[in-house]
Image (cartoon, rainbow, N blue to C red; front, side, top):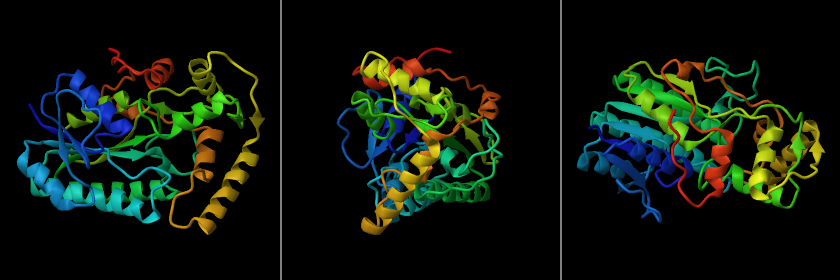
Amino acid sequence: MQGILVTGATGCTGAGVLHYLVSKGYKNIYGMTRREPKDKIHNVKYVFGDLTEKSSIQKILKENEIDSIWHIGAAVHTNVKKKDFARVNFEGTKNIIQSAVEFRIKNIIFASTTAVYGKLKDFPVKETHRIKPKGLYSKSKYNAEVLIKLLCEENKINGSIVRIPIIIGKHDRHFFPVVSKLVKINLMPIIGKPFHKVSIVHPYDIGQAFEILNHNGKEKIESYNVVSENPPYKELIDKVEKFVVGKKRIKLYLPYFLVFIVFWVYEILHWIFAYGKQPIINREYARMIGKEWCFDIEKLKHLGYTPRMNLEDIIEDVVSEEIFPIPET
């Protein structure tokens, strides 16, 4: 059975994908991490490497029987230094591909972001939507996409790019922690039109998408959106409130343009007084939560993808201490 290396093994997405692989009966699973993980997943072999150190990646590929790389690791946190987005997301991806070429890896699947589309039009957004990334993170991811297409096609490596929207899953450190804290103190506003749709995805469904593309066998590198569900924004907040507080409460409604201006001013002030780090909130986040943020997955469905995790399952997984069982399709 083929060996699969998953980068970013201890993050929310990487860990969820590893759980998915284990549940599907895969045996030769390798999780790449920079340090010893606190919570190891049974049947996963953890290997130590750093995306920015090419020699550490080469060592992993040399010492283990690996056929496919699922490249999930990235610099995503708001406290990441500006230079690290390019250093980790672009240069790190370059190190992965060059090492894969050297050791004749058969498949590379890259976790990108739907933020590469920039300002959205024509919903649900298809993979053919024009590309115009705005923030440091999305720009670094798109540059990595271009690099992957070039190097994989030059070296005849099968590959795919998976564009991922808002990720909500166990150990999520971005969306759910912020929203749940605001919900607890009843300060999470409904921004813009309350029923605009927001695409969310659980790591298990990302794992399913990667698995399907891993067996696709195409040398031409193509991009695919992946989504678990597209709940209306208000329904998403109500569902979080149900699990966190146990009841619905009166909510504050704010116009989108006001939130956008506040986020924009914060972004400007941050660059002036805290230059070098990505601001916690910015115009990109305002668009993500205040306007339609909905993506088409028909292209992936044609290959056999069916979302397994619904909104209720996703929130239950986040708030529960137990590992949520992967639903059967």
